[in-house]
Length: 386
Ligand SMILES: *Cc1c(COP(=O)(O)O)cnc(C)c1O
Image 1: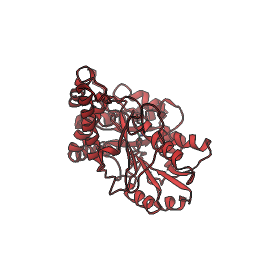
Image 2 (image 1 turned 30 degrees about the vertical axis):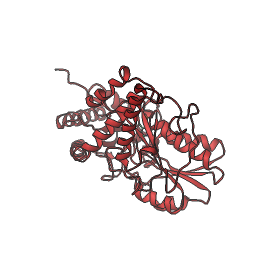
Image 3 (image 1 turned 180 degrees about the vertical axis):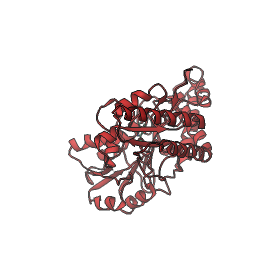
Image 4 (image 1 turned 90 degrees about the horizontal axis):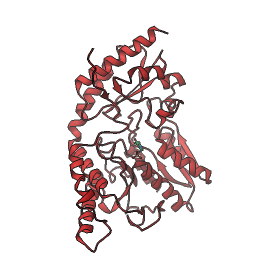
């Protein structure tokens, strides 16, 4: 039998860099290599101009002002800056933070770190469909609550939280609202004004940009959010994030975001169609469960848990046909079941027998059909030998 190429369905872990993005980045390695802070010569100005253009591209994508964008090394750093930066800056007003059990570890771990420093954190549960109950959030507010951090789209199950409603609840109480939008940016419409978002984390490598670059949106007015910097040095990024700006990566981020936003409506409906086709086909298997809300979810994510198979065996059987993961790319190394799938109420063995199928721009209907056939036959053969 002819060897079939590997089908890449791990776009929630990372994406390939778009050729147009690579092309935009290339001149900034060796030709326009100046330090964007060197404002005494044209090499510095050229780099600075390219960075300002990227800042405008990012701001436009979320209805912010360019000065409200702070470049970071990715969403992990943006989340750390948002959460620790607010905690340190507002600790005299209160030391209580609200987040959700299904957040990415780049939100949960900074929260746990702050707990060790004496802050208290409420981890809201989710409903079986992965959505936060707004009444639970309303009850969790305390007079000393300074921050709510709730992701826009979940990286494992694709669920979209009602961030506009969450933003409104936070604004009513004068509590700062941070959202990790690493998976959502460029896939769903985001508007920091309409949604009352004060801090928003982004990353390039989930939207066909390079790895190692991202940004944090920091609201400047109504109200102004004060952040304690987490990286001290030369005072770049208005003192919020020191370090020489990484011009090629920033140019790539800006280009990737604007391409993504421009293609978003068509690409979202195309991928949603393929995602639904995939879900239809894998339902040929009895006892397969969809994780997360059936419609309030990203178009490019399908997460399923399958009864009667060992998760490790299933993944190793599929390895040479389909590139996918079980939970998040980071928790995939661990043997423990995903905290996200567990939070939906699934037991350990079902949580381990979870496939996260992440579609992308390059995914075709033919690949979807081959992937679903591979999953169905792998599960059938594993069930047969039990
Ligand atoms: C990928 C991801 C991150 C981490 O982003 P990096 O840029 O890799 O640091 C954080 N949060 C979510 C929701 C993600 O999907």
